[in-house]
Amino acid sequence: MFINTSGNHHISEDLFEDIIKIISFVDENKSIIQETLFKDDILELAENITSSATFLECSSDECYMLDDGSKVHFPITKDDFFNSLYIESLTINFNKDNYSFIELILLNNPDYFNGSYFIINIDENNNIEFIGSKD
Image 1 (tube, helix red, strand yellow):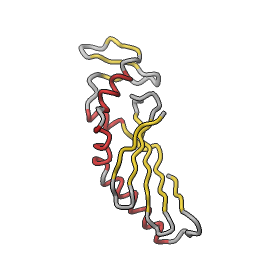
Image 2: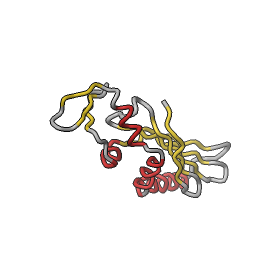
Image 3: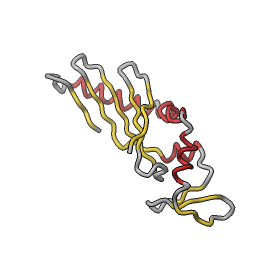
Image 4: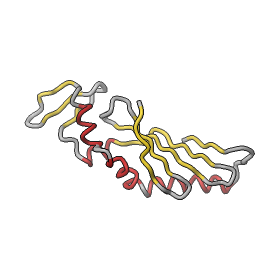
C-alpha cells in the first residue's frame, strides 16, 4: 500500500481513520470492482492469450500449462477469473482538501495475461472505473 499526501499535509489521527475507511470500502465493494473488468470481453481475451501456452492432454476439457506452471482449464469461467484476481498494490492519494483518490493494481494467479495488470481508479465520490490494462 502506498499513501501519497500533497504539500504540507500532515499525518493525523483523522488520516489513519480515512485510510481504514478506504480499505473497508475496497473490501466491501470487491464484487463491484471485479464487475468493472467485464465490460470488454475480458474472459475471451484471457482465453485468447492463454491458448498460446502449452496445450495439455487433460481428460475431456481443453487445458493449457502457463509459464508459471499453472494449469488452466477452458472455458475460463467468471468465477475462475474472479478467484484468480488479487491486489498487487493500492495507492491512496490525498490532496490538500483531504479528498482521496485510489488506484488499485490487480493481477491474476494463474497469470492469464502474461504479466499484464489491470488499473482500477476510485475517485473521491467512490466512483469505480476500469482504466485499462498494462504490461
